[in-house]
Image (tube, rainbow, N blue to C red):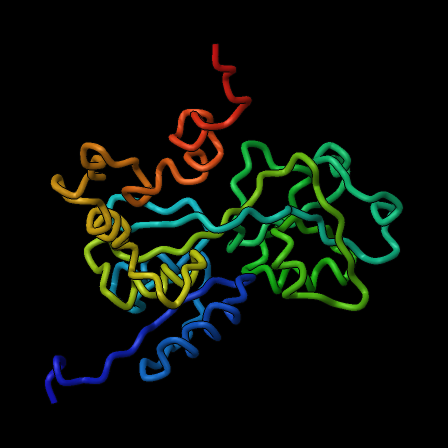
Amino acid sequence: MTSSDASPSFRLAYVPGVTPTKWVRIWNERLPDVPLTLIPVPAADACALLRDGGADAGFVRLPVDRTDLAAIPLYTETTVVVVPKDHLVTAVDEVAAEDLADEIVLHPLDDTLEWESRPGLPANERPATTADAIELVAAGVGLLVVPQSLARLHHRKDLTYRPVSDAPASRVALSWPQEETTDLVEDFIGIVRGRTVNSTRGRSQAPAQAKAKRPEAGGARRKPAAGKTAGKPAGKSGGKGARSGSGGPKAARRGKPRRRS
C-alpha cells in the first residue's frame, strides 16, 4: 500500500500541563473517520518533534522559532509557587518573588519559565524533571515555581500552591510546521478557534455570497409611469377625496338656490 492509499490520520502532540480533551472530543464528532493520535512530549522536545515530522501539530509552550513553525497563542497561565501545606506562604492569598528571597527555590532542567533573575536561593543540584522537583518539595528540600497547570498535574495531598504576582507567565500555543499546513491541520485550527461545523477552513465565502446578492446594474427600482402615483393603482388616486371634496360636479349644485330678480 502506498502512502497515498493509506487512510488519513492526525497526530497531535501536547506538552505536560495541557489537557486537549475538549478539542479531541470535537474532532471525533466532526471527523469520525479520521483517527486522532495523542503524543505526549516534554516541553523542551516539542518543537523538534514537529520539525522532524513526528506530529502534524502540537500544543507547545511559547516561545517557538517562527522561522519554520507557525503558532497560534491560545492562553496564558498563572504562575504559582508549590509549597508544603504547613508552610508560612499558605497564610496569604498570593506572594511576590521577593517574598521567596530566603527560600531554596528548585530549578528543574525541564523548567518552562523564562526568568531575568530567578527568585530565592539555588539548590545544590537541579532536579531532572518537574516531577522530581515536586518530590523534593514534599520532602522539605525547597519550593518550586511553575505554571499552575503543572502544579495541578503533580498534585499531592501534602502540597498546595499560591500565585506569584510578579513571576513570568507561561503561554500555550498551537503550533505546526509552516510548510505542512494540510487540510487536516486547517480542520484542527478551526476546532481550536471555535469555528462551527459549517465554517470552511478559514476560506470565507461571505464576499462571494454578498456579491451574488447585489442587484444588477439594470435592476434599479423603476420610476412610476407618467400619470400614475407610485404605489397606487391608476384611477384610484382621487378615490375618497372625489366624493367628499368641494371641487366635484355634485358639489357645485350644493348650497342655497339664488333668488330670481
